Length: 217
Image (cartoon, rainbow, N blue to C red; front, side):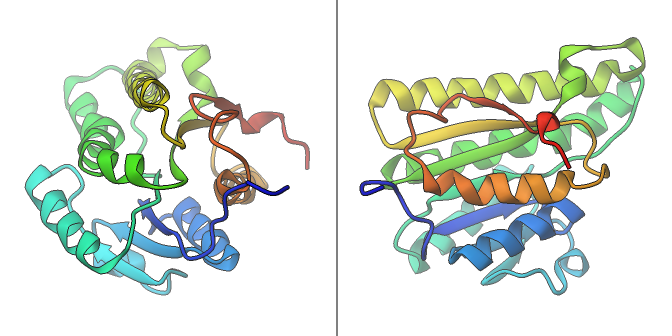
């Protein structure tokens, strides 16, 4: 359909690009024609990632993120996407585990999205997405820390979506819900869903909770 956005040559940042999901998403985006910026916390994790460029950045550090983002802006005409795939898993309710998860699941999302929020808002087709868990809808004490932080991340994304909706800009913030990323086909489903974000207009997907657990294999 005419009027639909395109991913071709758009700058898309994939945070947490060194994991299995990140690698699959980078490959799908690159295959679709995007300029993929693969970001991770360790250089060795980014080896052989299918991306136009890689960057090692502590995404929980606002100063480091700000310096990296300024350099990216100087080289690229726009920043059109942020796919936050930084994760981690620890069960239970212990304080140490909560702090470990909070830095990865929530702090990195807050720091990165705050830094690039205006860039996405200025794009002709800005997209931001995170991955959440089906366990948020059925929380248990054995996963109290994890589901609490995933729920907080979902709320942050909804706040971003609301802000962009109010401004009337062509930007969408989306949450993909999965069971477990090691389930057969889930990583491929996620990669395809991320690449497809630029094949539709922003209004149908802004603020959406997209349940990938319903897909059949």
